[in-house]
Image (tube, rainbow, N blue to C red; front, side, top):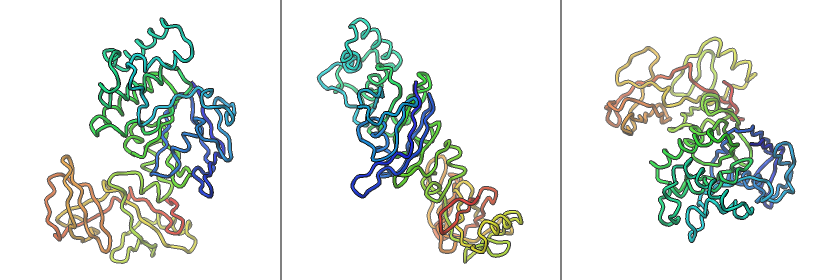
Length: 361
């Protein structure tokens, strides 16, 4: 297995910085996910690592060796694509074994390795079929088998589950993560789906505009976002954001105020040094909603909509000029425009600098 390191990696297409001075160190056997919206640079970064694109600046190292000028076939990296890229006229047996056949490996050894890999993936009964006779999930396993049989230094995966239906994606997420841990192979995985990233990754590199906005564990990414972009991208439903300012011992949102502790006030005063414009962030699970007033500092709002989701519901409540989302019980019954009382768990709020978008606390 291998380490992959990117140093100031940059790729320009004309005047556009598709990848902008990216630094990343992927440890041996680590599962790293490049996550972000369309056009953020994640796939271009993967293609640079694979050798399918040449960097404008910076270095790509595999096991401390610079490989910028090494052609793709000599980097010993296996790519798994969204489209599976299987040969339709060949059996599954031959599709899996073709990398070894190209290398000139003996037929007996190829057969043994195909059998071993197919058992690992649970597809040994499919070896005499052709890709057109398989389901999407089965074809994805074949694509993985063809990558595994090469025994590469690392897997590079470009949205490999995006063609599967929702139920199968959930299943394959678990299977793929388990497989990666069983084999112990270094993996870099590209996706725009935060659920995939959060459930599969050891480390997530969240990208936007060609830059890594935050590199951390999924739990850290969710609990301590570096900036407004990270906070808004991670979480479903997304974090609520409210413009506010620091006035004495309160956060003033215009139509309502939230009292804060002396400790928090001191931190904010020290951070801003005269500037008090903030954005308050609070996740829906940290918004408390009741049809009756239960505490003195409850805020009066009105029901905008209730979205039932089976095991829970999402309450959209109008609070001043803002629409606030709260996770509530599936039995929460309220009609549009009914009064609702809102409170925030002040131990779980996030504060950002309005001008820079940077995380404060």
